[in-house]
Amino acid sequence: MTVTLAAASERFGRDLDENLATIARLVAEATAAGADLLALPEAAIGGYLSSLGGHGDPAGPDSLPPAIRLDGPELARVQRLAGDLVLVLGICEAAGPAEAPVRYNTVVALTKDGIIGSHRKVHQPLGESMSYAAGESFAAFDSPIGRLGLMICYDKAFPEGARTLALDGAEVVVCVSAWPAARTAGTDDLAQDRWTKRFRLYDQARALENQVVWVASNQAGTFGRLRFVGSAAVIGPGGEVLADTGVGAGLAIASVDVAQELAAARRAMFALRDRRPDAYMLDRAYVEEALVDA
Image (cartoon, rainbow, N blue to C red):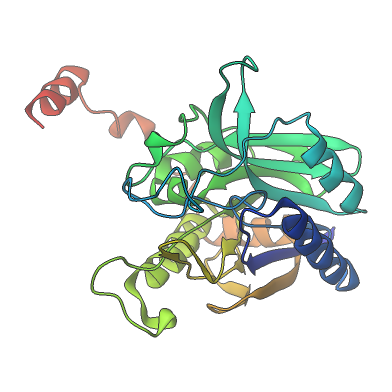
């Protein structure tokens, strides 16, 4: 079965009504292109942090994004916009008691009928832990476009997360991001920024080494002190870029026969079959001693 996958590079800020209007526009564009799945960026509802490393002003316009609940009205409104798409987007999730909620950086996959899967960001860069609690696991789930895995931004810098999803049967992995350009020794040409290059390198490597179809969305433009690298893409299981937006706003759209592409990739190279888990485990005592020394 061929599915059409769309990944968005777009700016999302604090204004929820503006966010929903942008989502409605992107859903319409993706639907007109025949998409079955649309991946929106990390923090598509309420925007991302305005800076990293604790440099934001919590009392001013750089305040934290609004925390919303999975069963709250905001995502209910998104469901009504989804149409026939599987829609993937990032939020700041509120969990636990109303009087003292825990905030998570979360990605949600939903359809017009409800949420079908979610993931809380496990790996936290540059002080993000000051604003969010960390997730604890990676798991794939069944969806209308096949078995799906979710990740958020810095998660993709760690091969173990994507490999866990692949071993759990993920055929398509969606990684939503708010990936910024370099903070030091940057360049005016975002396409040449070293963090832009790393963003794409991680996407292609994770797709290739796990032989999955990879869908990468990202924030675009600027927000607070951050300048985002865009670069949304759909990447095949051989690491080939099937569609991309470049560093500007837009949609990357590609039609893929997922089963056929995975079968072809896995006939030519046996990255999953030939694993040797027994060779990868370091002695626990050695690991604990190394951590203490570090």
